[in-house]
Image 1: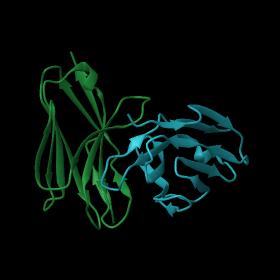
Image 2: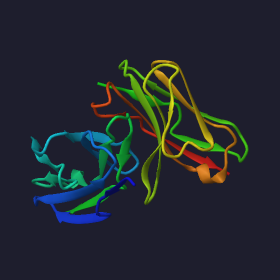
Image 3: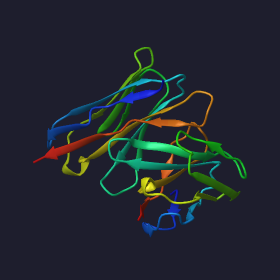
Image 4: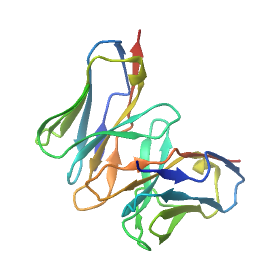
Length: 110
Length: 112
């Protein structure tokens, strides 16, 4: 079967670093996306990993290990506006389909 | 900037009605998608299209159909609405399958 697992909820303090994990089991793999979704709004693209390793983009970084079926999103210097849900999505190999996790709701406290 | 526009933010319909949700993108994207988003279940793919007049079933196509007569427009149709189709519906598009999806603002649909 196909499955993506993320923690349901996380809490962190403003200025801190937080790591949101994502593990996946899919029949094929052709890339992993991270999206941010504020309450009541559309998801917006954060990062894309297709090869193993770390992709850095400002305060956000994303890591992928294909052999372990594992990714994480690292958020540094947390700000209140980072309070949102973070969605992990895997692109299934050979299709146009994306499989989404249920999302991790991050609360940033002052 | 990519713009994906969904026709309504909020919609209330009655059981048994035929419901049309419209989505338009302005960036000449090949691929378009319809998802529904429910608490605890995440985003689930209903249908997608990778070209004009082409459509593929997603994970939960039952009770839905789609139409893509023009490249920029992808319509979701609830043939006979039921209360379990009350949900947030999100449309998305992407230039190619290895490119990120761009989402519309969503339509919160209530079926009474």
